[in-house]
Length: 192
Image 1 (cartoon, rainbow, N blue to C red):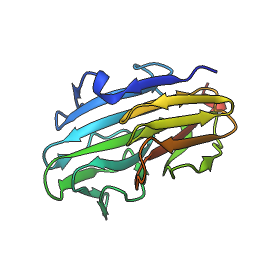
Image 2 (cartoon, rainbow, N blue to C red):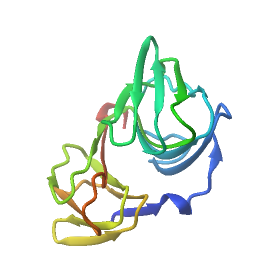
Image 3 (cartoon, rainbow, N blue to C red):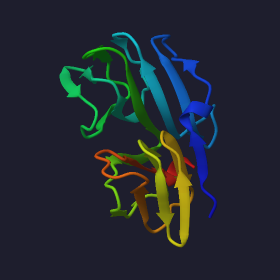
C-alpha cells in the first residue's frame, strides 16, 4: 500500500469560489471536477460568507490563528485552535467572523460519502471505520500503518486508499499538545 503524501505549502493557493479567501486543495477524489472527497487548507483573512455546497457534509477545524465564530443557519459556533472539529451541512448559509486576525483552517468535504474528522492523540492507535483515511499533521512525525513507518512533515496530508486496519502517529518532538487530525471517508456504493 503506497499512500498519497502532499505538503500544504507545495500546493498553489487558489481563490475561493466566492472570492472571500484562499484555499489549497490537498485531495480531490476521484478527481477535481467530480470530487466526492475533498480535503483543503483555507486561509481566511476577512469576515464573510462561506461558499454553499448543497448535498455536502462539511468538517472544519482551526489550524492557526485565534479562531473564528461560524454562524451556520441560526446556530453560532466559536472555534479556536485545539477545539473539536465542527460538522455542518454544506447547503446551510454559513458566515465567518474572525476572533482576532487571520486564521488557517482544515476542511473535509464529503459528497455522496460519509466520514469524519477527529483530533489525533500522540502515540495512540486509531482504527478507521471507513474505506479511505488519512492524517493531516500539525507537527512532523512518523505515521505507522501496519509494518510501514512513514516520515511525515508538519502541515502535510498522508492519505490511504484503501484504509489500513489501524494507524498511529508519533510526533517528532514532545510534548506536542496538538499533533494532527484523523480524516476518514467512505463513498456511497449506490453512487459509484
